[in-house]
Image 1 (cartoon, rainbow, N blue to C red):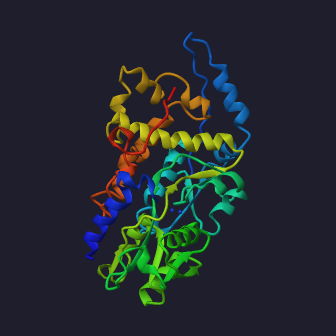
Image 2: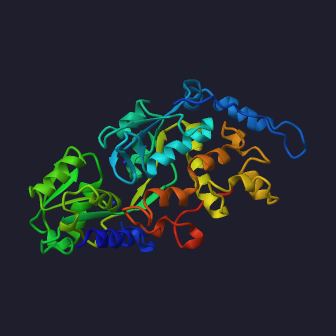
Length: 371
């Protein structure tokens, strides 16, 4: 299958609304809570008290440190990778910068710490990182038993399989007897085993320490196929020695809601992460972008004024400046801008929004109200 054709096909398969749901990673100045007047013009003591009571946790330490430490991927094009100039770029990287902008008003007040698949959750549990923004799937066991707290899903994905284009494998049943690579420390192996059993196929599943080793084995012919999230398969096409010589099967093996996470019990960091993600989604729904956000500050719409912190105390309730949403949008744009910049039609991946579009456009993205 031609590389360009493969990218377009996978984009529509992975992210079409139907994915939803068959499918499987510099310092800035500290911000202080501002006490805002309530509707009667008196200081809002509730918002102030919340900020003070919660200020002894990770967020207070982050402010004192002058930067937020975010665990990221640095080898997955489109989501988190190192550019030739040594800078980090990608979809998950922009979310990491959004968290820094929310806290400090500075998207560069973030330390992007690479964490492997095997160490990503441990890094959160031990406090090595404050937030995980690295293509990680939320599952019930991870959410309940690992001492983590997952936020809103930022990317709806599904597991797929890549094979060589000249093979006669066209579906999961065709994998019977084949050698299939999976990465250690993921849900990939279990999903693959269950789906192969469902179609009556048996395969030799080979576990690799990391995806680089897995892909190298596939290109060398040591394995016949390899499996990961379809977004990961698409991302890897760009770096394969012969992208024309592979194809991605149409089957979607699982649901893979890729979701940021914090350490369980850290309520204020959880709220910061959650409402920053919601702010990016809601900004797109309002039509507020990186280039026009200033003009919306003069809006007479009470919802927009509250959303942008012109009125009310949404930011103070989170221990953040009331205009934190403005700072986030100025830094990285809205959700749609982040998607298009890193994964959209003008990138090598050419992915459609599909399930990752707004609920008003048939997608799954939906923000609770800011009030």
